[in-house]
Length: 113
Length: 113
View 1 (cartoon, rainbow over the protein chains, first blue to last red):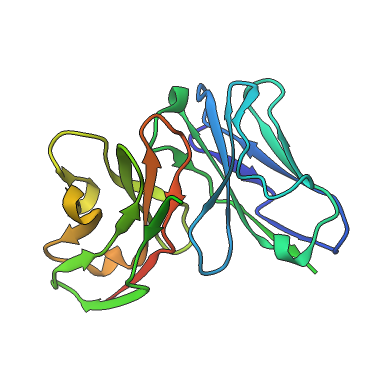
View 2: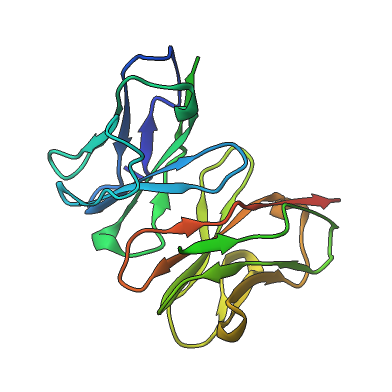
């Protein structure tokens, strides 16, 4: 596609529920990144994929967070047992072969009530 | 720990004024530096980036930034701002060879017509 697509654009969920956030990168981009942006803060790194494998998952805050990219294209960020503190905008970005200066999507705004 | 600081949280200028937004980083070793912009309702977009070479980097829309190694700074400048420059500006950095970006907290720029 023309840009990085993220769905849904907004998600409201109850505390304790499971959510999945989807990212569709630019066609041909092998590198994919997830960031989280809380109110009043800059984006914070979560995980980076090169192809199908997670090359760096050091930013995942705890084991409730997990991300996959099974075919090296679409990625899903999964959050189990959501907490109110998980409320944020989750950003996805992609780049060609890991080149820095990547293209961001519009994000998914997650609200945990 | 690696960090990026943006000390100006909100800057208000009149059209045609000159702009300088501060960015300081704390990184060991070689660093890559970036400025991203987020216009109202839009996704993060890359304004400019510095990897090596000429420390004065020119980006899109008339923006430029200067890498001053001795001051650990990468300030963003524009000689004459326009109303359409109203946006949030984020400075970011990464270690050489590392895909993970560390962002500052952002500076909200408001241009008064």
